[in-house]
Image (tube, rainbow, N blue to C red; front, side):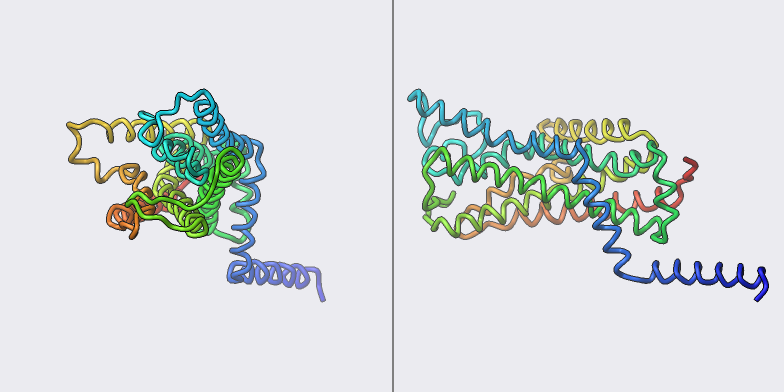
Amino acid sequence: MSQAEMSHAEMSSAETTRVGAVRNPLWTFGILRSELTTTLRRWRTLALLGVLAAVPVLIGIAVRIETADGSSAGPGGGEGGPAFLSQVTNNGLFLVFASLAATLPVFLPMAVGVIAGDAVAGEANAGTLRYLLVAPAGRTRLLLAKYAATLGFCLVATLVVAASALAVGALLFPVGEVTTISGTTIGFGEGLLRAGLVAVFVAASLTGFAALGLFVSTLTNSGIAAMAATVGVLITVQIVDTIPQLSGVHPYLFPHYWLSFADLLRDPVYWDEALKNLGLQALYAAVFGSAAWARFTAKDITA
């Protein structure tokens, strides 16, 4: 075989391997696993998770000190504090709900904004985005992997808050049967299931904002600029959601129904606003996910 024929055979073999990799479903799972692992191993991600885990500890210690000083206002106290805070002294499981209520408006979405904003822009800034696109994955699959990794972080971050709160609550306060918002009593096991359902629901509440952050990340090659812009959008929308004169647009803002997870603690569960929240997040994910895809697939990757 001549040298030209050998070269042609090698090129054909490489091309076949490349096409086969694209069509192999296992390649897609490999991308997802790689992106999620890379995201969770970064020091910035670990620092964010550490801060989130510390919030329930601080809340639990503060409530414990207040109780020890005899200054607790009882079941009707905790005015101005997070929802469910007044019930923590009676049942440590409520620290899970109180911590999620405290972190959801600011801490959790800010952490998600950092991860989502850096997803594409950070790679572009570091000069690694071009090399990622050399792999037989394609821009669409890479973008989906980035979004899936961000959603994975949403779930991990929420579970970290819930797990930390459960551990601190069980350590500092009694645990047992749970009194629902409706006034009925459910067993501790069912209360744990409700806590798990609430944690998953809170993670799902962040999917729309994660898609928005990913879209912002495709607009720039600066990771810091993308993160700042994403967090800036979050703060702006949160402010708009508190202005009474703009109440007409409130139901269309992605954080408006975030605290509807409280309805999951009713007996029976009240699904109206919870389903509105999930539908709104799906709409934001579809709109900004499509915008991110349109931008990323047409983006000129020169670095």
